[in-house]
Length: 142
Image (cartoon, rainbow, N blue to C red; front, top):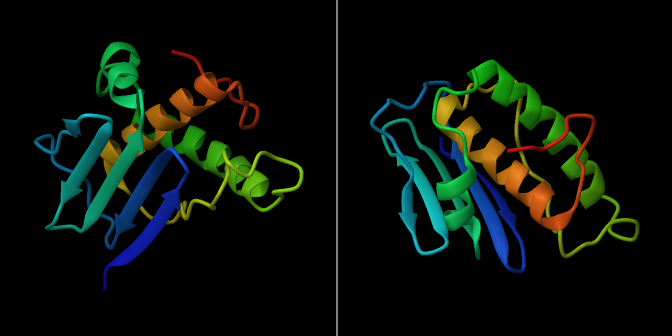
């Protein structure tokens, strides 16, 4: 059964869908169109879509190449940052509700594979740098 996880922002967004613990193959590179980045693999039913004005150009000029980080490194950062993101999303009176509109459903029990973690990691780095936010103890840097 395919599960959907959505994060939608007024100008930006991430959509994650997952159903299994299989990894993406090395052929599953993101598809860049305008300010949308999409990774899809219908066989294993994973999908990440990032829509944000300026993100595509930032990603193309700033993201470290694939396999620069290990999957474990990406998962550790993503878990910590998403935990803080979700905390902020649950406190709209304390944090800018335009930045943290919805929580991210990211389970540490699911192996999303390298590509999904790589794209989420890069988006969260971009988000923190662009919006001058710090999501936890790990500092976002290029």
